[in-house]
Length: 170
Ligand code: ADP
Image 1 (cartoon, rainbow, N blue to C red):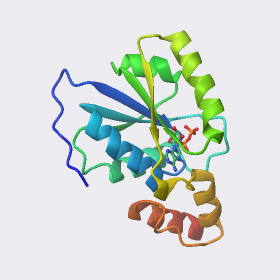
Image 2: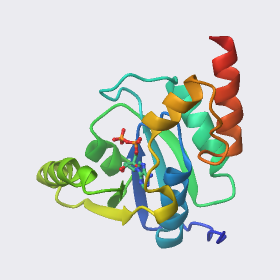
Image 3: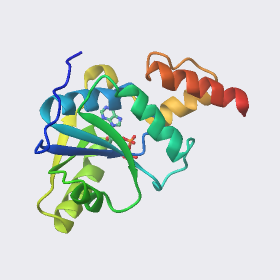
Image 4: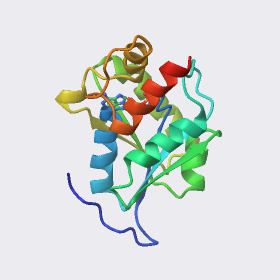
């Protein structure tokens, strides 16, 4: 796993937004690769996505934070505004999104064009999923975890443990 560089004040910043409910290895792989391309990467946890959430925003942020400590140029934050507004507020030049199968494309295409309409200075950048993670989604991880199936090889160790604890509490 490549070590990241320290980020100078004028580092090129990228925002990687998402629900991260929960963070999984496909996300971590995108973060690792973005950290190698940009001076600074902000993993931006969207506070109120239009989907049923398993986790609180605090939990989603905490699990991202734990998983990215090895990269000194990556930070986690939450936001509740439009993504382009938050990107501009954090001086990000690019919004990173991960792409899996062609099914992601239509939505991401529409989103990227709308974001460009709102702020043409912020570029949408797409990183193709790694083959190992092409089948991974937060929805599937949640489904497996809720039924007590092992998710240890799909998510960071801290997330797997926290999902187990969460299941025991419910
Ligand atoms: P959303 O932002 O739509 O709520 P997620 O939080 O699940 O979706 O994902 C955040 C970002 O990570 C999105 O760009 C999504 O396409 C990408 N992503 C999700 N799963 C994978 C994967 N297995 N490989 C690569 N990128 C992924």
